Every structure is written in structure tokens, then in C-alpha cells.
Image (cartoon, rainbow, N blue to C red; front, side, top):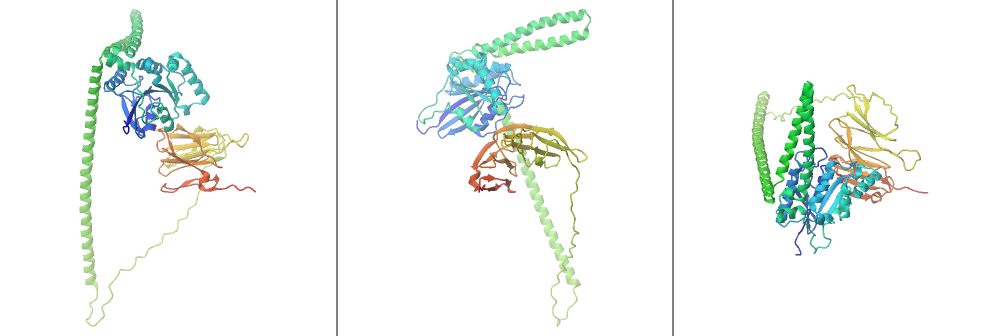
Length: 566
């Protein structure tokens, strides 16, 4: 009906660190937990909702990957299947699935192949055309290399070839909000009076309509077969290990026999673990829903306990604040009373020390204490003393910046490197790190352009750019080493950081360039967002010469002038 909000449900799938959480952050503005390391961040199915446009609400369903470091694949399949079948019975249907893959991966890993096979089984042939295979992290790979990898993915049957032939879509995600909303537009009706298309996945109909147990579904059978093959391989190896233990014992090689026995025990545990996982797949949809409900209750209990603990802490702090406020008030009253008593004592002493006046004598003027003699401090002379010279191969240095503690100096050259100097115990600076930045000039043959280096006020992050280099961000890790965290889609000839470190303002070119404002300089691990852009001509000139922020960060000064031609 007109005026009602339309709901579009889209599932996000892929291995840990493939870009699902970052994609969610772009769409919703919420900082979803990003899993760039080895530990999986998404343990349960979670839903993030946002308004795509007036009248359309998009719900992003974040799912755990089958490479979860803390859970077996069977538990992950049970979690995803439980959510899908539960929403299916409640007539909540998906409009599509985004499967994320890092184009920066040199080759398709085993877990990636497993994810693809399970995705095919979860969807079934009828729903494949609503899957969009989404590649991420294009900014980390040379374009030619990335194109070759994408071609291999699309042409290899066991990778993406099968799904592409059966109607799956392809999308290159460029790590920004515009790119994220663009791929979602495939599932959102363009006309207001049109309902979004929905799909019914094979796993949903198998569990809800056909009343199969999880191990009888296509995905369950595939996972079961994988385990059976792996278990058979382990059992064959166990036979060989037992023979090796027997031989080592006969040869009285006790050290080898002990080592083999430990290996045998580990293999037995692996076989038993697989048997238990196979047993766990023999569950019905109702059992999956009951398990999910129990987990949700447990999570609610944990959240309630955490909330109670937080409230107790807040109440304790409030009591402490009131006690401190009361104590300060009492102390203030005591000081005020003491000051009044001292003033009274001074007046009494002054009256006693004053000379007795005769009735006819004129009353002297009231006594006032003499003005204290302020001794003017001696003038302090300041001078600078030369303490060190540093010769470098790549001179001259064009940009220099110290960290606030003075322990590091970052220097941008007119050639190929950015040098990071560290101060030793004697106060001398030495090069401890070099960041590559090929600064080829577009105007000088065999020449190099100026490298621009801008440091965040706290010294933890630097932004680097050159005439032919896009803006790159480097963040200092725990060991004091700068490491690249992201690469923006623009280059800069001039840059400056706001005093609070949240904004980075850049000028793309000296002549007829653009002034761009980026937000998120204080959180370099998350993608920065360009929030404003204006031509230099907008400020009354065609050439930008410098940039500076006011101390409160509310004003950014960009001096400009026009180039005059005779």
C-alpha cells in the first residue's frame, strides 16, 4: 500500500576479513566490528537496518563464515540455517545475497572453496540468479593483477564459473558508501509502488516445507561427505601410525614411540570430534529454533548482567561525586569563615595600633597598605644551538614533521622515499624506517615531484601523497612502526589536519585543483569519507599556495591567487 515502508532483506556471506563489516559501516554509519585479523568477529547472525531512501528500509543480515576460528563448520551451518528457516516460517524472505571475496587473495583458499560449495547448496539452482559475487580490496592490488585474478575466478567452474553461468551477478566494491549503495540497488525497486522481489532458498524449503533434518539437506550432505572423507583419511593414517609405534617399540626407540603415541592420540581426538559434529547435523528445524532461542536467552542474561554491573558502577561513581561535592562545599565554607575571622583580627589590630586622636584633631584618612614592590625578573636570553647534522642520500627534504613527544621525525623527500628518524638515548636521530612513495613528476623528464606528508596532531597517523600518488594513510603500531592502513581515491599536493585530528583537508592540484574535506583521520582503520569538495576557483583564485587551520579547528585557510599572463 502507498505510504507503507517496504523492507528489503539482503544476506552478507564470505570468509572472515572479506569486507562484510566494513560494507555494513558504509551503509549504516554504525561501526560494526571489523575482522581483519585471524579471529572471527561475527559469531551469530546479526541484522543491521538503515533507511535506503524514504519508504525503503534495507536490512543487512551479517552471517559468520565457515572459516570461524572459534566454531566448527557444523555449528556455523546450524546457526545460519536456524535463522533462515525461522524467518522463512515468519514470512520474512530474502531479496538477495552478497558473497564477499578479497581480490587481494593470491589464490582461492580451501575455506573459500568450501564457502562457495555451501553457498550453492544453501541457495539451490533457482536462487543463484539473486546472488551477487562481490570483490573487495581493489585499492590494495595493482589493477592489471586484480583483473587477471577476477578473470580466473569467473572462468573456473569450481570457483565462480558455475554460478555466473546460472545468472549470478558480479560487482566490484570500491570501499565507499556510493559503491555499497550501488550494489544494493539491484534488490531495491526503482518505482515506489513496486514490491521488492524475494527468493526462497533450498535450505529453507528443505527444512520448513520438506521437514528434513539438517544432515539430509544439500548443504548438510556436502558437509557430511567432506567430514567422512577427512575421517577416512585420518583413520588410514592411524593404521600407519600404529604400525610405526609397533616398529619403534621393537627397536627400543622409546623417544620415537612416545612421539608417535602423542600423534596417535591427537588423531583419535580429531576423528571423535568429526563424529560428534556429524551427530550434531541430525537435527530438525524445530530443534535448530530451540537451540537458537536458548542462545538468545543466554545472550540476554549476559547483557542483563553486564547492564547491572554497569549501573552499579555508575551509582557508585554518583555517590562518590556527591560525597566529593559535599566535602568541597564544607571546605569552602570553612575557608570563608577563616578568612572572615582573619579580616576581623586585622581590623582589631589596626584599631589598637592607630594613635589616639583628640576631639579637635581632624580624623586621619583610612589606612591602606603600601603597594607591594614587584621585582622585575631578570630578562632571560634564548639562543638555539646546533646539535646534529644528518646526511641522507635523498636530499633535499621537502616536508618535515615531528611527533608530539619529539621521539620521531618524518621527512618527505623529492625522490622515492619517506624517511622516519628515531631519537636514541643520546638525543641523536637515525633512520629506522623508510616508506616507499614513488614521486615521479609529470612535468620534468627524469624528475621527481614534491612528497606531501601531514601528521595527525597526536603523531599516531600520517597522510602521504605526491603528484602521481593517491593519498595513503600510515598508522603507528605498538612497536612504533608506521604501517599502511588504507589508500584513498584522490591525490593531493597540499594537506593539513584539523587540530582534533578528525578531518583531513587536501588540495588535489596547485592550479585549478579541488579542495576536499575527509572525515575519519582519527580512525585510520576504518574507511575515510569525503564529506565536502569545492573548486579552488570558488575561493577567488586559480592557484592554491598553502593551507592552515585555526586553533579551534572551525576555520581552514586556503590562500589563493590568480595567474597573470602578459
